[in-house]
Every structure is written in structure tokens, then in C-alpha cells.
Length: 331
Ligand code: ACO
Image (cartoon, rainbow, N blue to C red; front, side):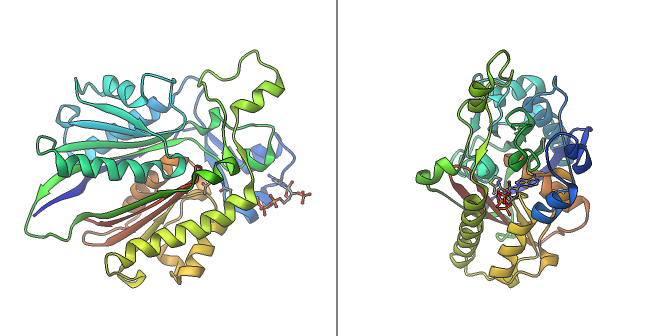
């Protein structure tokens, strides 16, 4: 029986820590407000010279090492990002060159914080439908610091930079219940206005007025996003469990998008998920958008929260609005 497994995982978060105390000196906020409203204590921020491709490339190198394969073994690269180095070429192509994976197809996916789950679904379908492909590299990488308005206290405290990567591989084995069992994604474009960023140039809005700068930054109606996130993350998780005849009791570890502790607690409450099943690392990463879930998977593995044969449920939500969930039997 053919299936798609996760053969390797890697992540990279930049060295520079931006603490809540640092933010107190930048905008009118307090560490206490940030921790109470979001659970975030610190986030990592890139150097000006670091780009999403650099973070993604480092995460990819670690995932390749973990899978014990080299760049030459990769047949396709998909990058989920909303902070590409450039409008084009795709960040996936830039990473291909850095990894030396010559001539293989590469493209980017933009589904914001749900981007990694969308990319996982696309990669899985490539592998299942193209027998020539063996290994696909899926990366979520974000330099959110380049699109955050550092004068807007309601958004700048939420985000961080980082990258996570997985190697997906086609595998034939006796055990059919292993690998990515199912992925479910959705979107509601009519709510796009709730969270948007009109223009993005990674070089930043140099030499433009503050009014024009507004076009370059994240704009969010936080309360509305908060309610929609809980509603959609619960419904997509319930739907994917239902259509696989599973209940939350079958799940060993839930990896939710790391946006806000209160969103995660509300999902746990509504779905009656014990908090100890919820993996949470947003305290030290903040919201890294498309990188959030692969970074969390890597940290959950490193912390022994995922064991072989465990059934994992990942749940994402982001601007669009977009959402997604994936069921993975760890191998
Ligand atoms: N420090 C201090 N006060 C602040 C800050 C801050 N950093 N930010 C906002 N406030 C103030 C507001 O100005 C407001 O003051 P007012 O009552 O005098 O007008 C007060 O705090 C309450 O503001 P709210 O926006 O109502 O606060 P809320 O409890 O909703 O929390 C938050 C705001 C944390 C942004 C919340 O709405 C949220 O988490 N929303 C989800 C957003 C999110 O996660 N987005 C990420 C992308 S989507 C995703 O990844 C799921």
C-alpha cells in the first residue's frame, strides 16, 4: 500500500530574542498585557540581512540531515510564505539554488498561517500522483518582522520570525496506517478584510511617507479574527476526525497554529481536549505564520511529545480567511 510519510523534520529560529520587556520600550504596552492576552513571552527576529529563504534553507538543511538524505534526493520544493524575499522569483527557487537541487520544480504557496497545511496537501498529492517523485521538501518560512508595523501595539507584539521544514516521502509497507492520513483545507475570502497586508516588498518601504507605509504592514481586526479562528479551527478539526471515523481520544498530540494561548485554550475547551495533549511553544516563538506548525512539530519531537505510531492532529487558521487540518500517523 502506497502512502506518504514524513521522513525528516527541521526548524530554525533566528538567534536574536525580542522580549516583551524590549517591546515595552518600543510601544505603549506591558509584558503583563501581552502574556495575559496572548501567552507570548518573547519572539525571535531576523537580522536585516537575513531573508525568508535563509531561514527556510537552514530549516531544510536540518530536515535533510534528519531524513538522512541530501539535496540531490529532492524531487520538488514547495515553500509556504507571505514574506517572500522578492515578488519573484519564488522563494522556493531561491532555496533550490542554495541547496543545490538542480532543475527540480519549485513554487510558493500563499495561504498565510494555514500555508504549511495547504503545502502539505499539495505535496502529498504530487507524491501520490507522480510515481517518479520520491521526496518532496515542504517549508514554511516567514520574516514577519518585515511586514509588522512596529508602531502598532495591537499587532507588533504578536509575531515572530522562523522556519520549519519537512521531507515527505513515498513509502510502501505492510503498515498501511502510517504517514499523512488526511488533509482538509478551506477558505472564506469574504472575510479577507479582517487581516490583510496590502503590499509587500522585502526591501521595506524606504523613502515613503507614513501614510504610504500603512500599505506595507499587517492590518488586523483582532477580536473578529479571534472569534473566527476558534470557530474554524474547531470545525475543521471535527470534520477531519469525523470523516476518518476518529475521535479526539484517538489523538496523542494536537499541534495547533501558534497564534494565541487564549485561542488554543478555547479550542481545547470547546473540543474537550485535555490541555496536556495540546503542544504549545508560542511562549518563545510568537506567531510565525506559515512556519508555526512545522516549527512546533520539530519542537514536539525534540521534547518527546510525539512517539512512533502516535496519531497527530495539526490545526491551522490564517488570513484569507483560510484554515486546514492534517491527520498524521507518526512513523
Ligand atoms: N498593549 C496594551 N494594550 C493594548 C495592546 C498592547 N499590546 N494592544 C491593544 N491594546 C489595548 C487596545 O487598544 C484596547 O484598548 P481600549 O479598550 O482602550 O480601546 C484594549 O487593549 C483591548 O483591545 P482588544 O483588541 O479588545 O484586546 P483583545 O482582548 O481582543 O486582545 C488580541 C487583542 C490579542 C490581538 C486578540 O484580539 C487576538 O489575539 N486576536 C487574534 C489575532 C491573531 O492571533 N492574529 C494572528 C493572525 S491570525 C492567526 O494566526 C490565527
